[in-house]
Image (tube, each protein chain N blue to C red):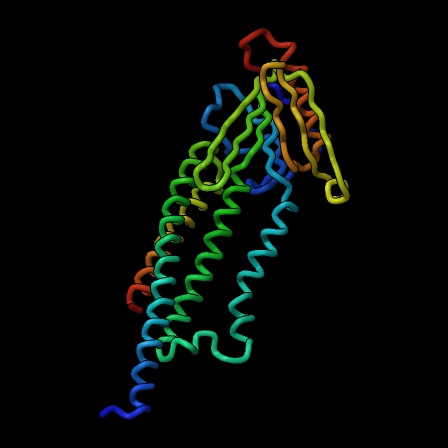
Length: 200
Length: 82
């Protein structure tokens, strides 16, 4: 079993965006002896616009209530109960959409194993795509950080070029892209030293 | 013979009835769509958790079920307003 570790501190919490050899994580098509070296998600900073948006949605009814006049006053005597139900629904929908958004971030995962790279894509409510590339098919790995945010928060994209007929893998907004690229390259080198079909 | 003020009251009542009913039906429609969204969310989370097994997967599925029950409760409340 390959025990080389990524020489970087990583959070052990399962909701982290950069996990080195995560414990208690398995995936659907994992083979016997296949080990997860890195588990990656988009950097937490990419969630900030959504967090601010949901915070705004949560305080919106409070702002509306602070306004002069009764918002549901035009409904007459029914105004109070309809308003109460509408606000209840508003908070439920806001929390529901927050749960949905968090789940999409949490399950949109890139894996680097000792055999391949795997990309799990969940878009919206009805789209699922899982693609993988064997390490032996990888030809080139490039990391890219573009812009102030990427450099300041140390996240960016990693491009994995596979054999000509296959498409390029793109790891978007992952933390520590240089370390990710280096780890993939190391795993490719280790894989090249193995006999075909061998899992170490 | 009805007076002018009682006529205005009658029109007022019809106007208030239609506006409040419209708002309730509008709310009801939103809640129905949200219940459908909650069901699809559970299904999606089951598929996601099956693809990748993590410690948080079960908690997220549980929260999505709570979300469905809460949306059904709001649907009942909205129905009671009709």
